[in-house]
Length: 182
Image (cartoon, rainbow, N blue to C red; front, side):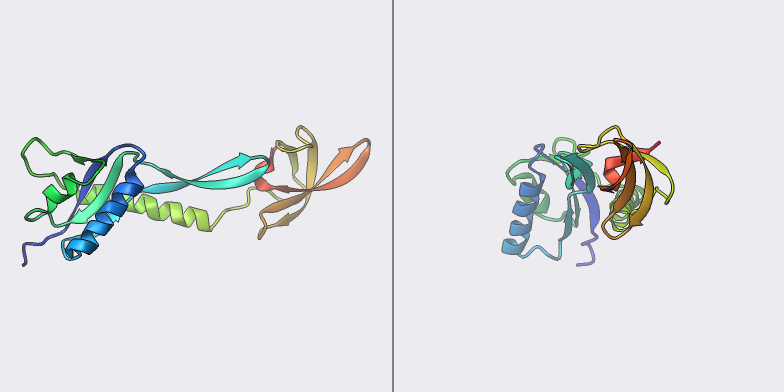
């Protein structure tokens, strides 16, 4: 079985159903014993940070909505089986009755590299502020106030900012997302 060369293909899905399709494919692989033909099914995602009610929330977002990446050797009934899964439209680059077109290795490396970069970027967050710097509060009850950074807590990603309120300096503990450089 030296013919089982695995290549990367793009599977088109109904938008928003990528996770469900991945689940179906994983179940199909397990039930039919296709592990030697299909090795990976990926949904390329990136972490997006939003501020809601003064809290920083991380959310995963697909950067190719409606598409799955699949590393497989498309032999025998495997392409037909994949196309017949619920919410799958077909292969990208597939012409009617033709063979699915594999991705170029350079494209695969770029996409997988981007996924790795997202994981690394999430692991290490650089601190854009220094002690003594003037910042403006952009969120919370002190929105619009200016203050000077007294202390930086890297672990909690918080700043201690001294803000003048009613002519008196008051310390505030704020997250990096609640302030911006003056």
